[in-house]
Image (tube, rainbow, N blue to C red; front, top):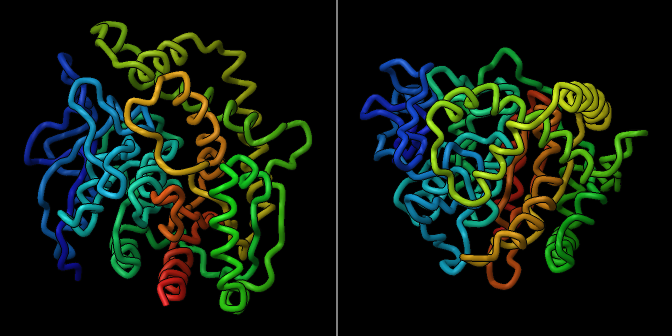
Length: 380
């Protein structure tokens, strides 16, 4: 049983009111949402959680910043002069400032992992399909997942006991420690150094849990390019699904999107069938490659984000450059349908940056158990 306070972002339909997806002037109510709360919300309530309310998010969940032109930006409790991350910004902030113990959020391209990193939280994107999305509003269905935030690793794990569908559980222990060299190359030098120093300081304990680390290049598949190229595969396949889901409504209603979100929807609307087919074929190869890399026992260590959260009101062009590096990291789990947990274990410039653990499909429970052990070890 969970005796905790819960928040859920607005795209996760709640019977306490219509879910708006935070779009000014044109209220988008998902046609697929009946008059019932999302399955995950109901499951947590059934396990003893109390729902405090709905929370803020980016426009139609198509951003990683947490800045909403029409509704404002939730204050990042860890670094108030920086963005909170999105799109699950409100759930992250409500958890980080102690208002709730659990925050629910969707993670399609990083919408739980990124705010977790920026706000100094634990956050999980589960294996695709392991948490029911019944009654949730879709963005890109083959990438959409229901994730959650917590400040406490035991709480994070206990939520998994409630939400994770058991039939696809992977029972093999995670005993092969892989470090993603090319992922660290996409992070700031200060971030890589902070994580390296942390790992070195706990090397003996970590090897006792995971064995000696093996450095790998994740994007080593011939003809598939670097992680930056993988992000383009993600951008196209995700964009195609988003436009299929929302394009008809956007074309009919012509909503006034804020900067960044507007350009992304325009991009999605212009994707050609040839671009989409090519990207989908590459995605299949990348997914198979990741399955081989991780096997059943691998755990991949990488930075959640390139660095701490960008400062509020960073110029759009600068934010776009950071976003490209960020999505080169977060796209890995999406392309493979893999579970990933972000741990708040280091700080750069006085602000948190997450260290991520990624496992094989279905290894969510093992990742959550490992997270609990690592957090206890690091806090000593």
